Image 1 (cartoon, rainbow, N blue to C red):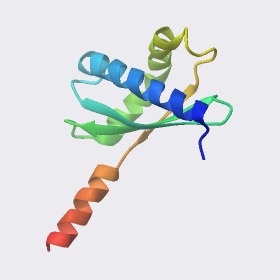
Image 2: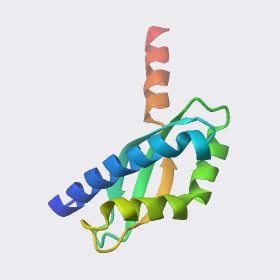
Image 3: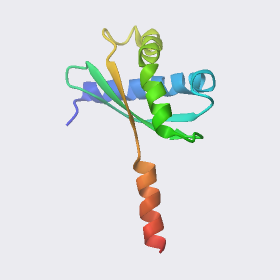
Length: 112
């Protein structure tokens, strides 16, 4: 169970990371559409697990690896946005959110 503080920080990070990905998607990630679906922050606020939905790309794994490679740059940009709200910027761990694919698969199975 997340505390109120964790929930507030998660929402803040989700909003600001979404803006960063929206702004940087064209130049860094080849125009792929990247949506931040969830952010989970650890109790000590040191690590943020960021779940992403990836669209308009042929190879999702390669895009996810590129995002992980650019993680320090993304964290730096995030730090510039939230520097007055957080003392320490959490380390970012990126994961693919496959819940939409799962839902689509369930709908396909139900329609058969």
